[in-house]
Image (tube, rainbow, N blue to C red; front, side):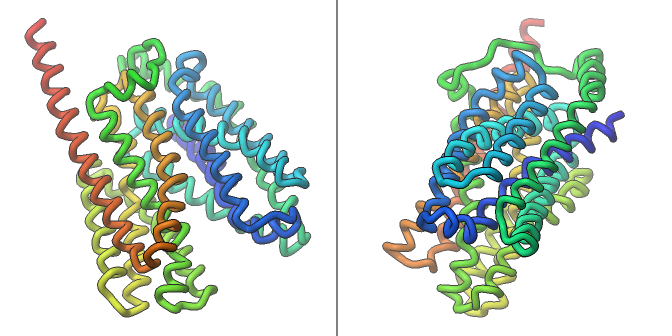
Length: 402
């Protein structure tokens, strides 16, 4: 039963990754057909990001009113509808309208599944869950390139992914009994958080360590997205590498993240979340140092690969450690604000880097990476200090009362 359920959850995360990279892959064809500037893709991306932030922050309320499986089905289904909306859009305004349900669906399923796996499964499954997102994000552009090559139309690429999303929604729907059995088993074993009323955001940030965790997620996800969006330009403009080669090595960065998370799932059986996070931070530091200090393009590319590998354990390990750091009762609401902080970071930090390059130079990319890494690392260690003390105080109080 558990094997089938986790397979369905993996499939749901592939569904989350499938459309994420479609816009970037199709936009060179889309913007000319729609007769809009190249930069307008950023507007669609911001609308999607705002939707994900809103739905992430409200995921706790949704789960309290329904349950994880219902929210997952509704979210994947909503994303599928939005993808078909993209497929049949013939104006930029229509794409902006369909970007709203796209973001709302993606943010909900992201927060809900991260919470569900953090509460109910071992750490290895969290890493493999995010590896599945990478699988979906890799398949999406391939399907789009296939559609454009064979039919000359980006619309057909969105239709193919939309059909896949609907199929996955149906599979999740017929798997409902598996979710129910797992939740009942956890309740019988007292392995379930106490139900409480949804917590307003102003109260969430009062939770000990919450603000620090939000900054940590903002910083890390800003780092990961900045590297993904700017690595190719850095290699071309600063390193003099040709565009095709630079694009290939940027894809190796994403491959490093995906493969690294697959390997990280195995490492979780031997090492703690904190150890894996520290290791990832160290590897990113080495990669950024190679970019910064070496004049060799080969060494710089190796540095980029190391940054990808270093990113692999951080996100899933921090998410999986949420019940330990904040308690099972606060896990869903904390993962919701963590997801929201992540989306804000991915929305703000890459454009901020772009603005800085206009004033300074693309050479600052490794410095920018290191600054965000130091902020993320400092804040996460601060979370461990705060929640460790808070947990110790809570345990002492319970012991005194007993």
